[in-house]
Length: 125
Image 1 (cartoon, rainbow, N blue to C red):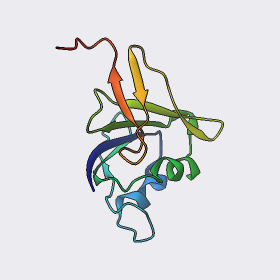
Image 2: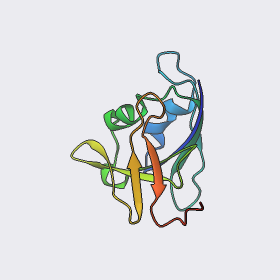
Image 3: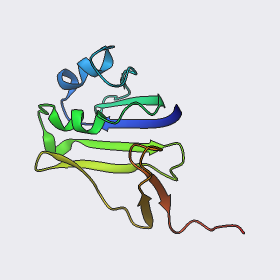
């Protein structure tokens, strides 16, 4: 099933932790690889999924040994989302932070994280 989604991971001093996710691994549910997009001031990695095959990604990211778990931020935008959602580690779990003027509607079997909409977007009749 075709389903586009972008995921960005931002984390301090996490090159060693993220390096395995930059290489193919047949043992993972997903086959796309993260690419480093960080620069001088921050460490970040991005991936674009082209299929609905990344259900285990957030749990996998939770399980990693982050050198600074308080710096981990995960941004996710599915193809029908109005904007990126933000997840951060709290007590070892990736938890979505509520963003003002947004709402998430779960759509099992259609998306991994649901559809994320802006509630302040003007709707045309």
